[in-house]
Image: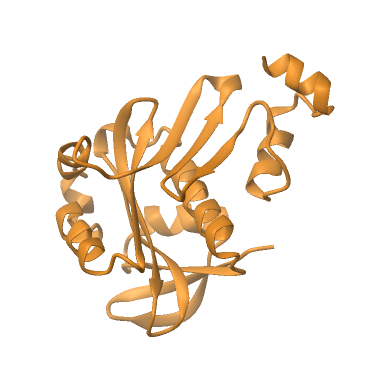
Length: 197
């Protein structure tokens, strides 16, 4: 199926190039797909490596799996409780956008984007990958999907996030995607901004 797609549309078979197309929102390629359906489901398929990472709406079918996600002890002070995050999403349904992170059919993490009304900007608000599934590249792909979600749905030019000082691992991940510190530290968080091009 993918070979026929390539021949029909003239896309390169180079997975790296196809990946760049998707991240930059240029096109949909046969090895990487970003699909947005009613703002509820986003999926990224890396066929060449057999990896499927997706963001899916949280429902009664998967909420228990999301609530059961955990990080290691040394990360707990940096990560919000998923139950608390979902309570916030319930209270702010118009400005909070929570998703379960899936690897194939397994829930591996949680991400919530949001709109910060006080400052009038969109954020990567909450994010965690269960300790069992870290260091596999899932976090980066989930963040890229979160960014793509905000870009596609709201047509924005920048995204903000916050990192608790000392959370070096998270800060490096955000920086690798293009976030840069703004110099502002507020409510115990270092503000970071990603300018979308």
